Length: 127
Image 1 (cartoon, rainbow, N blue to C red):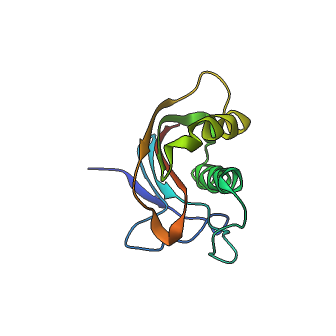
Image 2 (cartoon, rainbow, N blue to C red):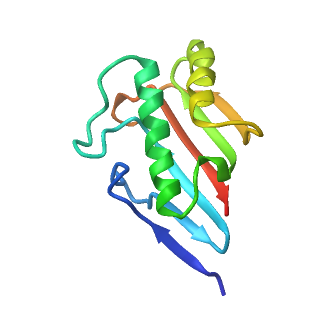
């Protein structure tokens, strides 16, 4: 029998599809992708890639906190960028939200993201 709990917070954008913000199974939390939406307006934050990356990590942090964790508890992080030339910027922004030891990570270049976002992150957190 699986001990599964759905994680939801209004401090992060509501799901825009058929998914939960996160699902906790025992001490592992599977975090759905977060894009840089303002949770209040459900619109992309204005600004450049750095502004979007910052909001995306704030949204991810809000979901972690709703699951009684933090970004420091993420063990695997997947990043999706529509332009890999932003790779140095994502590293700079990530360093503002994470400290060593960093989680395992992948950064993947993709064609497009929902709502025209430039970046998305999802991951796995262990509490």
